[in-house]
Image (cartoon, rainbow, N blue to C red; front, top):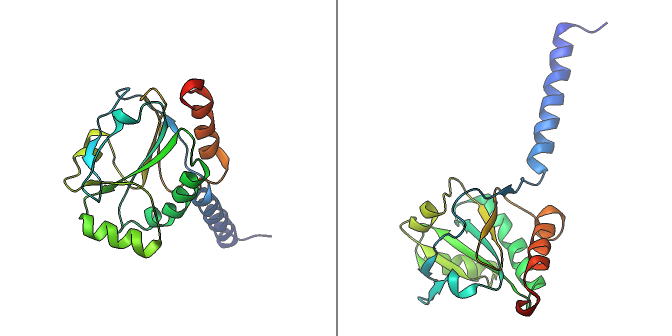
Amino acid sequence: MRTVASWRSAAAAAALAFMAFAALAEPDFKPWKGKASLPLVRNDIEGRTVDLKSMRGRVLVVNFWATWCEPCRDEMPALQRLRDRFAGKAVEVITVNFGESPEKIAQFMAREKLALPVIVDTQKETANDWGVRGLPTTFLVDASGRVRYSVFGQLEWDDGPSLALVDKLVAEAPRARR
């Protein structure tokens, strides 16, 4: 016969197991309900102007991150693999750094051997325009320039729902632009 203490212990263990599973589960993409097109015209870490409007015709994965954010740092290699996977296709991975200097960002990218485009948002204006409330946050933009999905949290981009959504947006893109 179980005592109240043993029931509580079993319930606590079950709750911890559920929370551990939930933490490992991939975050859910939410259909975007905000403005269809969001502005993004900023300099990258090399000082070149990047304008998302010039990237119409490509599916964009726009990831907001910072070097001090552990889940962001952990996600960066997966974003690099995603970019490599779609090299030569109409998909681009764009990262937007949240509030750090170009020098600090460049040191991190070099140390981690990452070759992702990084837009600098030192004043966090772009993050504010896009409604970013936590890091990492990722948006999927279709080939017509419409924001379609957003997700908060670290993702694995090698397979699963995140890759399936990118593939879906690529399949929807006009054939002439793929």
